[in-house]
Structure formats: structure tokens, C-alpha cells
Image (cartoon, rainbow, N blue to C red; front, side, top):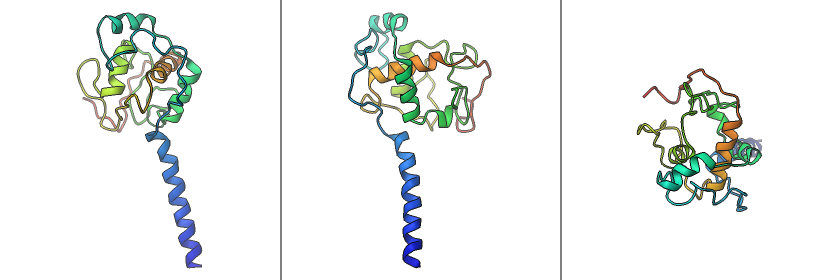
Length: 164
């Protein structure tokens, strides 16, 4: 009976650990998206040079693939299924309560370095994702997915991220 109890405990712990791992893992399946190499995605993360500025206007991604990136990285567990915020901030395209004023280059910089366009740091609970975690093409898809979500003009900071 003791062995069975130990085995059951180990199984429950293993299942819980396995459920957490996707949030820390890579979503890049090795297949480049059609938008790979789009203007503004090459070079250093968040480079705001000429290609970054031009890329902000022309950058496109695949909404369906972006949805998969959002799910695989458990973004919804903090930002909510609709991206309007839960335990973390609203990241809809709201210009007053979300990231609607951010260009793709600013979004990319925020994801890669945890630095927002205003120079402040992202929430301590937010990971910095390198290109080995989320490829540039997948990040562009994620941005397209977020742009497709309904705008929610309710500022929601979340309990994990105190107002800065």
C-alpha cells in the first residue's frame, strides 16, 4: 500500500510538472513562417533602425499560428484567453489600456528584453524570450494574433504586476 501511495504521489507531481513545462518551452517547430524575413524582423531584437520603422507598417503574421504560440507559451494563463488581462496586464490593441500604440519593433523588444517602449521593465513574472524560445517568425505570428483580438479599453494591471 505504501508503494502504491508513493507511486500515485510521483505521478501527480510528474503530471503537474509536465503541465508547467510548455510555458517554459519553445514554440518554434523549425518551420519558418511565410513572413520570415519580413521587414523589421531581421537583425538585433527590437532594432529600431530603418528596417524596424519600415517593418512596423508592413509586418504581417499568421493569426492561426500566433494562436498556437499564445497557447503553447501559456500566455493566456496570465493575460487571459482574450488577452485583456487576468493576473497580468491587458495586451489587447487598446490604445488607452493595452499595447495598441506599440509597433511590432516595440513589441519584439518588449518580448525579447522585457523593456517597454517607455523604458520601464515588464512585470517580474514575464519571461524574456530569446529567438531560440520563440523564433522571429513565430513572434510575428503572435503579434498578428494579438492584433486580431477584440480591443478591451479596460486597464488591467493584474495581481502579478504591480503598477509601475
